[in-house]
Length: 515
View 1 (tube, rainbow, N blue to C red):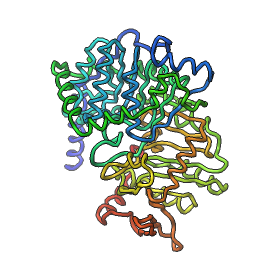
View 2: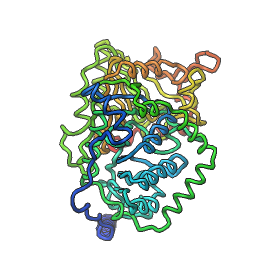
View 3: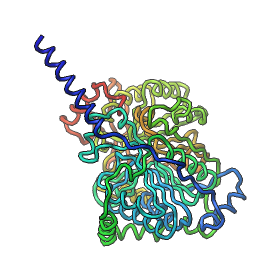
View 4: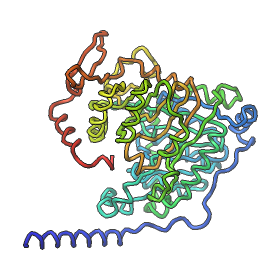
C-alpha cells in the first residue's frame, strides 16, 4: 500500500510539473496575415534569362545535374546564392556552426543586402548555437526566418522534451534550396562540413541533385506550403532578441575564410564549371521527367491524411521493378511490410541490393540495432546486402575519394534506383521515423544515366562489406583487403565485444517506432 501511495504521489508530481512547464513555456501565436509566397520565374533574372528559353525548348521537362561529390554540392549552393537576383528559399533540418555553415549563411546575408528576398525555414532541432544570428538576420530587410516546430524552452533546449515530447518528436527533415523560382538543389545533405566532405573526422557519403525548370517550380510551391503551415513560426516570436548576432556572424566568417577549410571552399567554388555554363545559357543538363514527392506539412502536427504522405505517394508513382532494385539508406529499418515485399521481389527473380552503414561506420548505433534483424532475414531470403566500411579504399575514383576525405566515412544518402531507369533522391531514410514522424521530400527522376551510375558505384567491392549466410546459417562479412585479398569476419567488423553486446541489448528494446 505504501508503494502504491508513493507511485501515485510521484505520478501526480510529474503531471503537475509537466502542466506547469507547458503553461509557463507556451507556443507563440502563428504568424498573422498572409504569408509571403514564391515569385514566378522571370527572364529579368540571370538564372531566368538562361533557363527559361531552355524550358520552352524542353516543355514539361526538368534539367538535372547529379551532385554526388560533397564539394560540388556546396559549390552549387554558393554559386546559386551569388547568382540570385530576386528570391532564395531554403528549408533544412540541420545547419551547423562550422566553416561551411557560416560561409553559406554569410552568402545569404550578402544576398539580402543587395535586395534579394531570403526566406529561411529551419527545423529547431538542428540549429544549436544559432539563436543570436538568426534573430538578427530575421530583423534585416529582405530576410525572413521561420522556425519549424520550435522548442519553447531555449536553454536548456532539450529539456522541452520532458513536457512536450509527442509534439517535439515530429521534425522537418526536408532539404532544399531554390533560387529565383527556376533552379533548386534537393537531396540528402544538410548544411555543415560533415555533409560537404570538409575537414577532419567523419565525412558523409551523400547525394543531391541540381534541378531547373518544372522541378524548381514544384519545389517553390511545396516550400510555400511548409512556410505557411501550422508548424512554422516567425523567428522573432521564438528567439530572444539579439544585438550582437551580426558581429558574431562576421567574426565566424572571418575565421572561416582564414582557415584551411575556407580556402578549400573557395577552390571548390572556382572549380565548379557546370553552373557557370548554365548561367551562360549552355545546354549542359539532362532534360527528363522529374516528379517531386513530398509529405503534406500537416504531418508535422500529426494531422496529414495517409494518401498525402510520401510513403503512400511514392509506391503509386514507382512501378514494380522487373529486373533489379538498388536501395541506399543511411538508416535502414524496412519494417515488416517492406521486408516481405523485398523477399517477394527476390523470390520473383528480381535482383535486390540493399546498402546501409556497418556498425563501425554508423553514427547512430541504436538504428543499427533495429536493422540487424531485418538484415539477417533479408540475407537469408537471397537479397544482396552491403554495409559501408568506415575506411573504404577508393583510390581508383578521384571523385568519390573527395567524398571520403575524412578519417572515417559514414553513409548519409537516401536513394534508390529501379531497373536502371528511374532513381529517387531525397531525404527519406526508409525507417519508421521517416515513414510516420518526420516530414520528408525527394525527386523521382527518369534517368538511366544517373540510375546506372549509382549501380556502378555499388559494384565497387572495396567500399563495402558484403553480408552473406554461411552453410551452417551464420552471418558473415566479406571485404576486399588492401592487397586485393578476400577477408572474412564472423562478427561485425572492427567492433568490440562490449559494443556488440550493447547493440544486441538495444535490439530487444521496444523502441523501433521512434527510430
